[in-house]
Amino acid sequence: LRDVAIILVAAIVISFLIKTFLIRSFYIPSESMEATLIKNDRIIVNELVPDLIPIERGDVVVFKDPGGWLAGQPTPPQPNPVVGFFDWLLSIVGLTAPDSNDHLIKRVIGLPGDEVACCNEFGQMTVNGVPLEEPYVQLPSGSSAVSRDDFEVVVPDDSLWVMGDNRYNSQDSRYNRDKPGDGFVPFENVVGRAILISWPIDRWTWLDNYEFVFSGVDADAGSN
Image 1 (cartoon, rainbow, N blue to C red):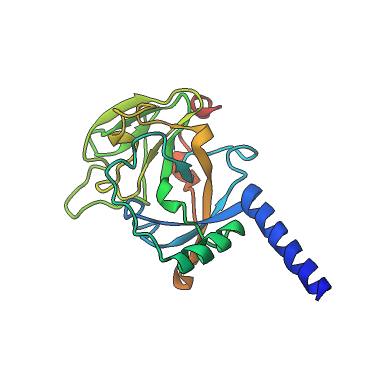
Image 2: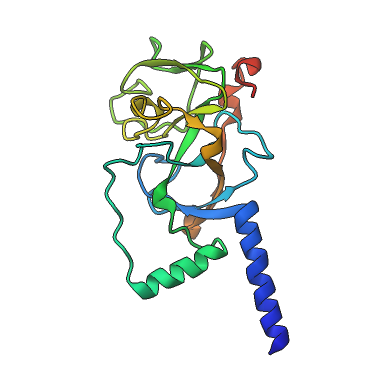
């Protein structure tokens, strides 16, 4: 019994350390990243990004609300005490994510120094003047522009410009420019990069950052 107890404690400690420093689980609370991510998908997040591994354009990142982005969102129902206890217990080892509703997930479009604008005469996003062909974007039927509203910004130091793949149904950087940070996400708010859909099983897949989409963008402009 003592050996079993030691093994269980060691497993919990190791799982806790992995969850704290390496990877953790989140679930998708909204439709803003469709069709890449669907509401209630479970994802695995690499927490080494950005502290040890640099963020790249196209990465799908989970981040804490920079301030006011989640204002007005419906409050999720509270689970009964028993379910809540087990949810908390499993969250210690990273198997559940009860704080997912306090976080957001979007795709990185602009790095520090990038000039991000939309839309050109073909309805495309541009980064540093280079038009992007974005295969991950979901648009309403009949729409050709990758953003409902035009904009032009320069990403400040230590910040990101992020957008949802479901461009006409995403409260992303475009629509939070009146909030703290002017719609940009500070690096310190980034929890990590989403790398894998882990649940449901029929949606298991690695998450691509579509590096080729940004291959023509001036590398010097986005260095940090």
